[in-house]
Image (cartoon, rainbow, N blue to C red; front, side, top):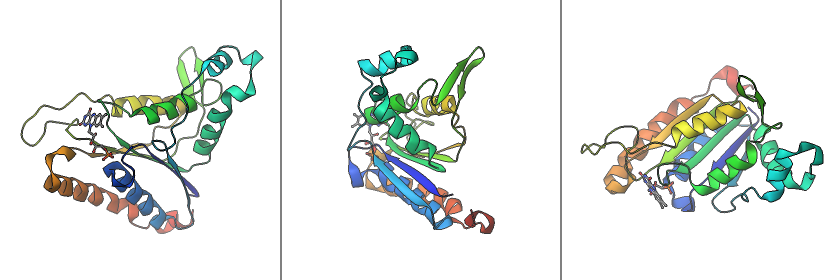
Length: 211
Ligand SMILES: Cc1cc2nc3c(=O)[nH]c(=O)nc-3n(C[C@H](O)[C@H](O)[C@H](O)COP(=O)(O)O)c2cc1C
């Protein structure tokens, strides 16, 4: 493993729980692959632009392509292509991905570049790679809360699974940090459980360390 792409998506910066645990996950990968380079992109701090009219025209009419229409998209796709592992740290916002992560997705999921359309459906053009998504949420969405509040709708994990599969990324692991609005004790318990899940990632496998 030579390059890890780390995307952080919380407006709360270094205080963000998804930022903290996804950074520790990146550190765990580094412990395993000391020579790996980490490219960090703070999507919340410097969000990708929304797709604009030039982009939508270029998508519809590749013959009349205005290369500048895809300038930002090219950079972000090349950065993803170069990564041997992808780590995303993201909050749940209104049951789904926050806007900066959606803006990144709209730039990197591009027909003829990261996927193609076939009669049997969309086919990804990027190679698969280990990908991890750390999700922080105030409430619970994988099941009811400890006090029995029903799970919230989850439009985050299924959406990321579908959209990343569209471009060829299916080796996906989710680590969820749920119930973070229940106070400091709950936060400590949730972070400890997440850190326990990072231990096997940190463990050095001699064969892999040589990669
Ligand atoms: C605009 C906004 C929308 C949110 N929507 C949800 C939500 O749908 N479900 C939920 O459980 N928590 C929601 N939260 C709470 C955050 O997910 C929670 O504070 C989480 O810790 C944020 O992640 P971070 O610590 O990485 O910043 C929302 C917070 C904000 C600011």
